[in-house]
Image (cartoon, rainbow, N blue to C red; front, side, top):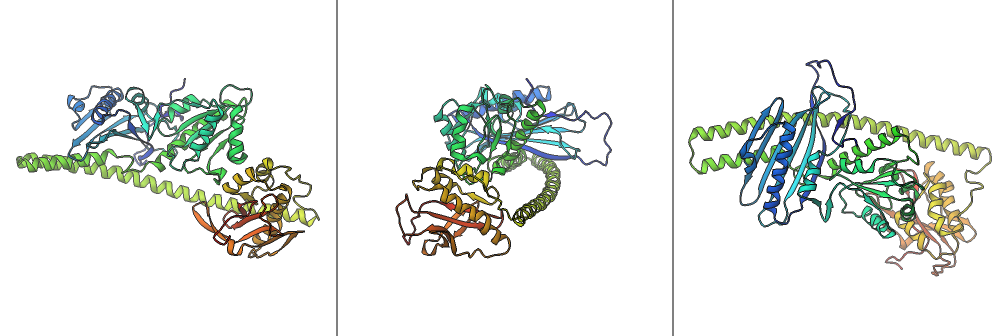
Length: 540
């Protein structure tokens, strides 16, 4: 089996790089969790010993005896370095380790792993955090991110957990409808911190198209890998809708913050299908590892969830200097402590400048990419409008001949397929159409076609959307009046002031039709906030 350690995918460099090439340090991923032991000091000590075993294997040498006692130390051997820092006061006990080792294949590439273990008096669990960094002159870093083997070692020997969930590096195989429902609940959990990499199993297959076991080991602590057989993936489609589901051998990365209203493109889908080519599967596997690594950088905040080695070392040196001063130690001893702190600060400043340069370069590249994508999107929207105009110029209607849904169980999928890019159901509306008792889904569908065509054309051509008019006999587009309400859409609140309604002023849910909607300028589409029933507001 391929090792899930970070591996170089480029050719080894045989010639020396020019001195003018700048070596930059970049952070790849972060892990933040708790040690499983109930006695925090004992759990921290056991984890520290495991970390030191791993460090000795990385530097290929034995560390000084003081390392096992949690004291500060420095060890250098053949281009491989290991630094330790630790202290304990009445508020906390912290211990940190940093290991630097050269890449086995690429010249001037160096891997850095930072580990912090700590606990506070009276707490039942110890904390653990890890950072993986790489220093390299490469402008394009060709690696496959993976958590260091230390994470798997600690998970097996000491136990790691994130909140109430144990971290063990195994794939969660969905084996029942109840587990499928549990998966949906966890995907929608607003407190979820880790991305879920959901690998569907195609019909007639026994396993996902990608190596889900390898993926689970490579992303232990930064993602959860789930395998969903074909007989259970239908539940995801039924509950989330086709655009947000995953099935037939595809793989989807459900990021934290996922909702029924999520943009499908924000939760990347990899369509592999049955008998996926090895190259496609490998490409998807690499992309998923990058998604998990990048998301760990976004979710685990430096200084709160994850501590840098430099922060612990600085606190440790401060503590030692104050201890010497309070004990009345000789000036020479205090001076040595001060010089040690100055040297550490110089090292931290150098690394900070490298990180600042990397972040500046990344920001510039991302900004240029975003501008290009924005231009492409505007170009695509303009081209779609051109094609629609050409169809109408020939005397045809874009949606002529499209079959209407004959039941509410097919309504959401019909909207996704026919109205995509023009009209979108909110998560609330998507749930409502599954349970409604309104007896005419085809009338509702015709109303949405009117929104997708006449109403949307008016808005795109500069209209205000004030189209108070009949749509068909007995159906009108009108203001909500006193029934207007605020609606959460994305990260903002919008006012829903228009709705489509049928006449008669009936409140019988079998005959009363109300489609509340608003215009989203950013996406150039109509958003259905709620349908097809009359909503209850302060006015009603």
